[in-house]
Image 1 (tube, rainbow, N blue to C red):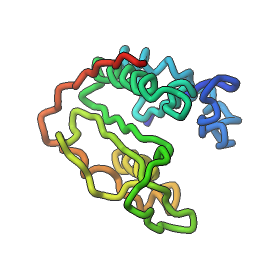
Image 2 (spheres, rainbow, N blue to C red):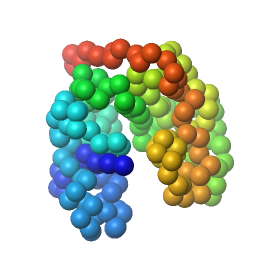
Image 3 (cartoon, one colour):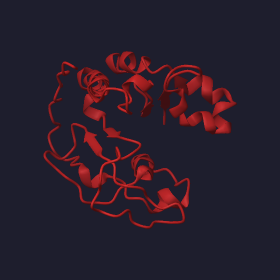
Length: 193
């Protein structure tokens, strides 16, 4: 399978979230030069039908929605990425997962379950965008960040990497691969204050 990690370069805003920088067998080998590319290349690849099987996108701090950055500006950035996929030639074979790395500091009435010695933190949103996503569907299955990895492992019949993804739920309950592919819901950007 093919993959790319669209991320800011060292010294650029947002590089702090480039997780592959911490994985030595990627960071210090040819994998870094072959697979880690500048974030703006994502839209170009989506428009040209050149997205790999799996992509990750890391944004600059100004688009991250972390305070004091504008959530409106961050949302518009995400909309531009999504619209590129939905308008591109690979839409009918795409699944996009949008999630956040923290819960925003708001109260959650559901205590985090105990999974292992690391545990889970407060719940974070996960949005699935795909021509095969179930319409108006809210999953009540417990996912975790390893569920994204589990989806890839299940889709490409790959082995698991850790004990954590081995027991994670794979997000497949959010899809109906037998349905007529949904028309892309091309989104409008908002005017930010």
